Each structure stands twice: as C-alpha cells, then as structure tokens.
Length: 157
Image 1: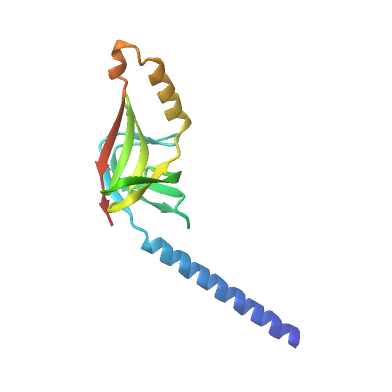
Image 2: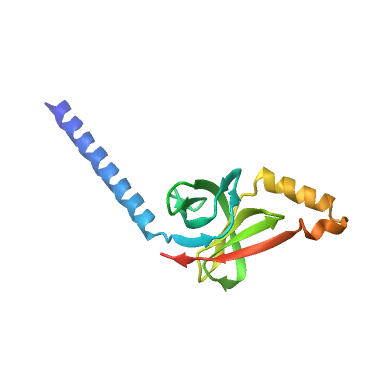
C-alpha cells in the first residue's frame, strides 16, 4: 500500500514538473520577437542557399544562441548558431548581409531599438570568398568582386 502511494506521488511530481517546464518554454517562445523582411536576392545561411522572398527570423531553442530563418511559404528554412554583437548606437530592426560579387551571406540580425544584435557564425564558404578577395585585391577588376555590406530593414512582430 505504501509503495503505491509513493509511486503515485512520484508520478504527480513528475507531471507537475513536466507541466511547469512546458509552460516556461512556451512563455519564453511567445515573448520573443520575430522579424519579418523582404530579401530581394538569393542568400547563404551557413552552407545553405535561400531564395529571394519574404522571411521570418526568430530565436531557435531556449537560449539566444541560434536563429531560425524561414521563408513565408515555408519552402526555405535554415538554423544557424550566433554570437552576441554590440553597437555604440541603437540600431533599427534589420538584417545585415555581406556581399562578394553576386553572393550574399546573412551576417547579422538586429531586433531593433537595442544596442545588441546577433552575429551569425561565419561559414567556410564565406571564409573562402574572403581569401579569394584578398588574393585578387591588387587586380584591376577587384571592385567587380569586392566586398559590400548590404542592410535590409525589417519589421518586428
């Protein structure tokens, strides 16, 4: 009889813990802002190419370490690890891309009205592009393949 009572109390405690954990995770997920932006060009997130279009960017998981990038039609999706980045001034909600020739890499995400943003971990392909750019920097056509930072403003939801 005592064994059944202990078993029942253990199950009740387990269920309460599970319910509390789910409630906290749901509350954290709902309190996060989601950015929406119209990206007019194809771009890279890590090693994955995402086509031009409307995108939603939000935190993935419980911590701030990863971002989920999803197209409005859900055909293009990527998750990428990030690090915190800071600015001296408040930045509007925006996506920052690095452009090398015709190739764009998502680099930073700023939620807006804050001095902190998220810096995506640089991909092997972008590192290779940087090396190639420095190799041809003395070439007269280097402007054609040069580096440029492109900013797309986003809305917060």
